Image (tube, rainbow, N blue to C red; front, side, top):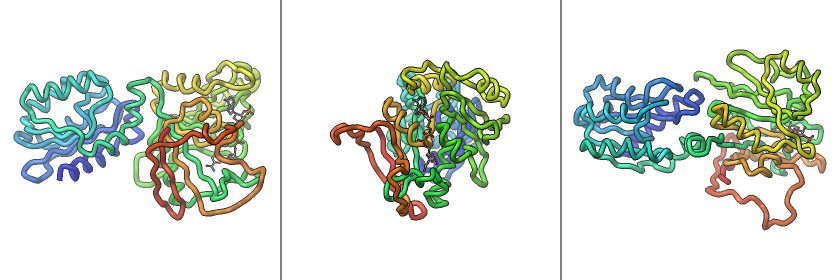
Length: 362
Ligand SMILES: NC(=O)c1ccc[n+]([C@@H]2O[C@H](COP(=O)([O-])OP(=O)(O)OC[C@H]3O[C@@H](n4cnc5c(N)ncnc54)[C@H](OP(=O)(O)O)[C@@H]3O)[C@@H](O)[C@H]2O)c1
């Protein structure tokens, strides 16, 4: 039964997707005599903690009730004591926690204070699901680096695009929705300049019936060789673009890009390459807690070579297109021996609209 209410806390936490970064996703449910009397979530960065919202929802009639939270007491940007003390004052008798915060000191403080005050605490309810829910937060709070996802769609014969470069669309409509869910979840999305030239993508989030959050669009383009008409150069308050360029970007291109309202970060160039880790570090410094690398083949190769990727999603569509020159998901030089392959861990898959979406961790 406790799993059922923790599942509800996870559902509530998900309402903050795209709006809480770099805070964690948090949901809370208050139960008394088998009836939910209060629910809450952390709706957006800087707003109330989920527990506080749930207690308000219960009109502070929570004395003797049980509280389910996917994460231990958490106060956005502040002192966990405020949350723990509010829980204690409310008279909650037992707290179920899904995941203990990776910020160990804060976690001990929060849970320790509850126990000290005589509140019963049980941790680890739906722990795996709760950890996956906040894998972005866990990585960012402990390393200051964004959690890096990759996701690509490939044909059954292992191609990212047809030999002409056309890749619209490899996967089913249902799998495309998965892309937009991921875009909603992350703080930034990256593609290479060839993908901009070939596909002219918008890289925005398109989902129906929910508040939309567009990730920061990061374009890897050494010398800014992007058409002034490219859709990614159309920026507004909701939709921003950053170009990761070389320090050797020609002045006229830099000027053109800046005139479009995009931001440029210049990186050292070594043997024609920018060190991918430096890009990821620079994003982390800007409070970007998550990056989704959508492609293409060369950018993905660079990301894997530099070891920054944390999680892979790969949609495999039951289509065969052939073409020895058609790009594959991960280009670059590649390895020589199978023993050097990157082997994913915790691999799982689901079937979405006829495609198989693989998921795994590095
Ligand atoms: N099916 C899908 O899910 C999917 C998703 C996205 C794109 N695509 C397809 O992928 C194709 C494009 O892929 P692509 O491999 O040709 O191009 P790409 O990866 O989009 O862009 C390659 C560009 O990134 C640069 N680059 C990569 N790593 C770099 C580094 N470390 N430092 C500096 N520059 C770096 C390359 O520079 P250099 O020239 O110096 O190497 C090149 O200019 C298109 O056909 C597109 O439709 C498919």
